[in-house]
Amino acid sequence: MGRYLLRRLLLLLPVTWGVSTLVFLLIHLTPGDPVEVMLGETALPAAREALRQSLRLDRPLPEQYLHFLHGLVTGDLGTSLFSREPVFARLLQALPATAELAVAGLGVALMIAVPLGTVAAVRRGSGLDHGSRFVALLGVSVPNFVLAPLLILAFAIELNWLPVSGRGGLGHLILPALTLGMAFAGILSRMVRASLLEVLGQEYIRAARAKGLSEGRVILRHGLTASLIPVITIVGLQFGALLSGAIITETIFAWPGLGRLTLQAIQARDYPLVQGCVLVISFGYVLVNTATDLLYAYADPRIRYD
Image 1 (cartoon, one colour):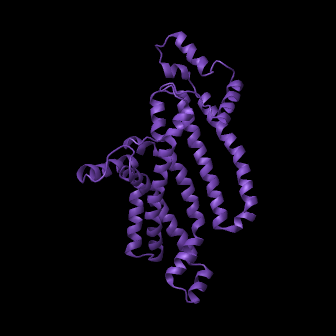
Image 2 (cartoon, rainbow, N blue to C red; image 1 turned 120 degrees about the vertical axis):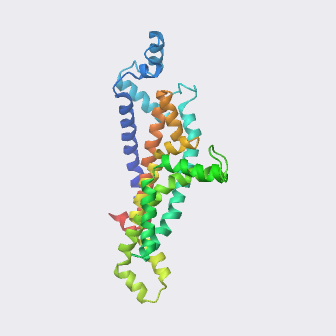
């Protein structure tokens, strides 16, 4: 396990470098003059030149790239044009809120999907199975920008149980987490069902039943554990999507996270802050995928020797 872990961590370095380079090229090679976009067409030439020099856009592209890599290593991603604060500090302020919301959304999805998918697999073809399919289809079909206002109308305005916006205690987290988790739960429940059905047809499951083990232990201990690999894949991919897909949810609920900060940076034409937000979201995907590979090895030891 130690060698496998070391190998995966070493592979993380070139992947991180490649992602950083891709973000740099996408930002810098986009058609149009970023200075003109940020300041507008009516800006004075002196103001344009001053901003161009502060962003080092007057330097050759290779020199800009080296400066970008140096700043990335040292934690200097520039200064926000809107707030005049260091970009790295703004990102550190917003990242915990996004991580909290993503973990809560994932928790909601798992609490709904795993029991729902397990029951659907065990009671295949029954009313419970068809009901779980309807719930999954509903969760996938209703987008965040529709589900979020419905939850606000029901639980915040009509029932007055939960706050509408902001980040505070547990009450502030419930509605955004439900909004993020419901769509993920629909996808995950079908994956749990399909994977568990495949496992329950294996020979060792029949052997466990023949030994006299209880049905609950056969399903939970042998069936559900063995069906984790495809489920871990979906969880890993979707958790990365939660980090970036929280933009709409964070905006609706005024949640002070990375998604809302990205939208504010785009609206304010804050070039350095947009670049920093895209970098953090990209790194989030890379780290989540690496963690998924490590969970593979833990769930199925055979992967370590491939």
